[in-house]
Image 1 (cartoon, protein in one colour):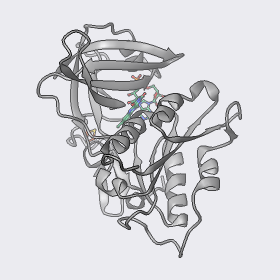
Image 2 (spheres, protein in one colour):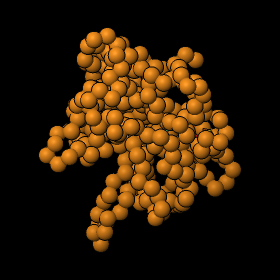
Image 3 (tube, rainbow, N blue to C red):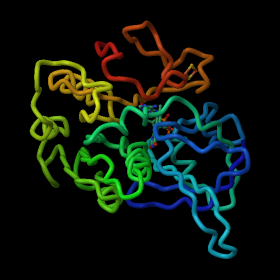
Image 4 (cartoon, rainbow, N blue to C red):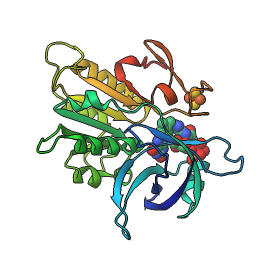
Length: 282
Ligand SMILES: Cc1cc2nc3c(=O)[nH]c(=O)nc-3n(C[C@H](O)[C@H](O)[C@H](O)COP(=O)(O)OP(=O)(O)OC[C@H]3O[C@@H](n4cnc5c(N)ncnc54)[C@H](O)[C@@H]3O)c2cc1C
Ligand code: FES
């Protein structure tokens, strides 16, 4: 499906926010889903690039007041594909597949009284959409779950969307590896200090009414540490995995991961999985 870029602007350094109005037939995405984007019509780069839905909102049109469905993608320029995407100007058409994949399980998360969101690097991209949905999904006059956000990055220049999470009413904790902002060290070390202690042994809290839940996205090593911590504290965790992708549709088996129920395709069965499903070794 072709979408027309409405804006594509640098937020800072190598981070951009791309926005388009969803055309007819574009399904309302769920947090954790992604788009598979063909950056150029030519064969270079040949493969599509997967990018998460960062936000999707209904907005009134400035001229006629009609509601339009605006979709946002937050991305970092890391290589050829994202560098070419950063050059795209408004009104350019771009081919996207999606929304694809299985996102966060909002039913389970929505039952929690406290949601711990853990973002490493670009992990903030899908998790912001999750936080917004949790805020919007609460019933009128209900407080909804408390949302505590942990953002981890190399240094302060790589901490993004902190203000936007704050504006949603989330409690924020920041960790940088060099200590230039917030806690000095890994975001999972910070998480350790704030998560509630295990109650009665490491019993999964999955499905337990009101029990806190962790939702995380970031590098695999960080997700493995989150999974281990969740197990120690007896908390349920949902993690969004990133992997190189070919088809994005479950056909090429280019993105498989080992789970307790065999190999699963990240693009089709995920990218979000229950942490306890994943076999975290190599
Ligand atoms: C489901 C999913 C959702 C994603 N969402 C986002 C998002 O919202 N925002 C965002 O900025 N990025 C996201 N990514 C990562 C993004 O797809 C890659 O950064 C992008 O494809 C790189 O393309 P490139 O041509 O610029 O880089 P390339 O030239 O292909 O690679 C440049 C560098 O990036 C590394 N890299 C490339 N792709 C990946 C990958 N999939 N996982 C880990 N490292 C990679 C390579 O090892 C290399 O070092 C997501 C990935 C997945 C699988
Ligand atoms: S990318 Fe082809 S099966 Fe996942």
